[in-house]
View 1 (cartoon, rainbow, N blue to C red):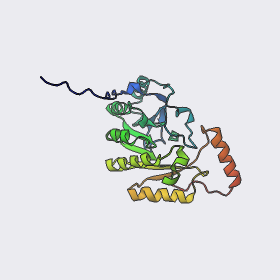
View 2: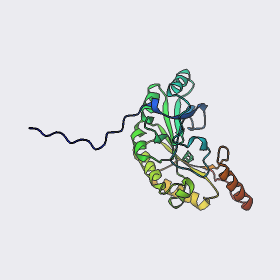
View 3: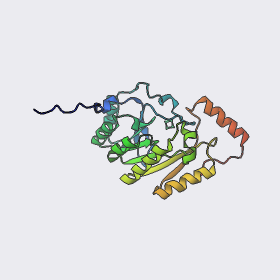
View 4: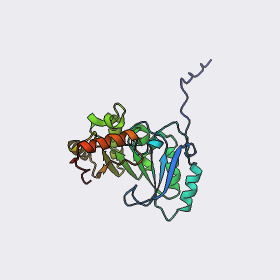
Length: 239
Ligand code: SF4
């Protein structure tokens, strides 16, 4: 008599398709989201972090439903063949959603290059999709010791740097971006980030000026207070 196979203690997660994506919005034409490319940008809903300066606060709630169907994104891309050469998945945090790989596969099948903006919160999923990605814009938000002050989440430097290592190991071109929130970071911090990522092998590092459009009222107030009390504070150094 053969014994019954052991019962699985948990079911495998169902495979998610592009149709399952919660899409917050689409920018049909952008020349600045992937340097040197004309891209449509697909903003995916939800992010696990709460960065001080986030200018997409309306799309970080992971429970909020999508506003655009994937089928509408495909229609838009079909109509723009020959006008665009790429699609950038952005957010929110695009690697949060399981349908990302399928969406990237479909986009590549339509003949577009694939770009990805990420903060690196989900290194495992990032590693899974990297074979489908032609370029990554990865945020490194702070030196390790100040990471959670920017993201509002403890230990968030760990997944971010693990993600950077995945990207470098995969050999995918990467631009590391740091947004200079002067209420938290100073010039030494920016220099430390640059030193750290350069030592890891990054050659493209950009420091961005913080913006207040779309940011929370609390951040706008605290930045205004900071600027009043530090009128000579330097702007972001050139990238
Ligand atoms: S990782 Fe990006 S989308 Fe998420 S809270 Fe930070 S700035 Fe906003």
